[in-house]
Amino acid sequence: MSTSVLAIALLAGSVLTPLAAAQSISFEDLAGVAPNLEFGTIATGGYEFVSNHAHVINYFGFPISPTAQNDSLVYLASEGETLGTPITIRRANGRPFALPFFAAAELWISAPPGFPNAASIELTITDVDGSVHIETYPLDGIIDGVGGSPDFQAIERPASYALLSVAFAGVSPSSLTNFAFAIDDIAVRPVWEQIGLGTAGSTGVPSLTGMGTLASGGAGELRLLSAPPSSPGLLLASLASSALPYKGGTLHALPASAALPFVTDPAGSFTLAWQHALGASASPQLVLQAALLEPGAVGGVALSGAIAADFVGLVPGTELIDTGPPLPGEPLARPSGP
Image (cartoon, rainbow, N blue to C red; front, top):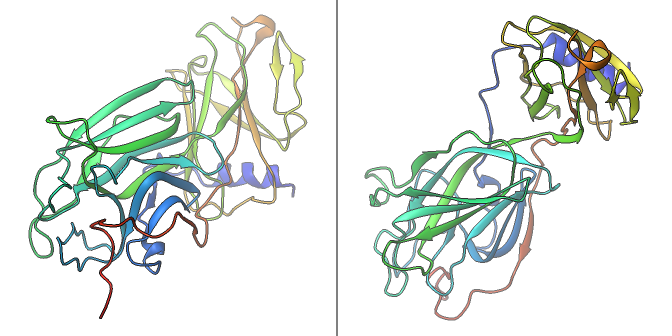
């Protein structure tokens, strides 16, 4: 059985409830690095975290001020002021992703002089079309360490599925200077790459999107929208994309190695979800495209855009790029001596 046939058999045989789970980046695999390692770039779970000056927090015994805790062994933080800078997340392969929620906190239980806590977390979000927008989420001001109220709070974002990067920063209404903050348990979903345009029918161009991964153990979902209602169609799969004019449009999923029949619902949509994928990672890519019978389309067939499937899964191990020792006077440096 070819890789593409295997993947389509996986989809057809594993239709479950709509995708609910997201990959959680908890940074626990970084617990064994140098205490409160300063980093420039960290790669974990298929994502990169980039900052001019930030830290992996895995040591909480500061003589200056203890830091937030959430029953985690490790999280990322920026101490603010002239040292701390925003922390940006992006996919290591450059493809888009979704970020439905994350956990955040003020960093210091009692902020040391010159390193105040943030009042809010500001997200600077860059979408695949190059547009940039800002979201701000207030922090609750509760930070009392072990045994008290939860220091970290869960923050849910609006649904958006085409992000190239998200920069986290600590802000305060009183100043534009960086403020101390911490982030952890970041929920992410890969989004598949759009590689070809579709052909309009009476309801417009059908939109085919994918989230999640076909890598072993992964979960995901395909969604077809704006298609003809109650219309039969085929989901075509190919190991490559070879554009061919067809019925007034372009077929991109060629040569097709498999075709999965389906019928859209009365709203013109179709959803296919899976969990615990068996894996089909031998293929460099899997191109998918939907073709539907549509009397209102040129040539009688409406085509969705083509998308490239994602085989990225949890990456074993973590690559660290150390930017050097802490700067003099930095409060996140572990004290020397016994």
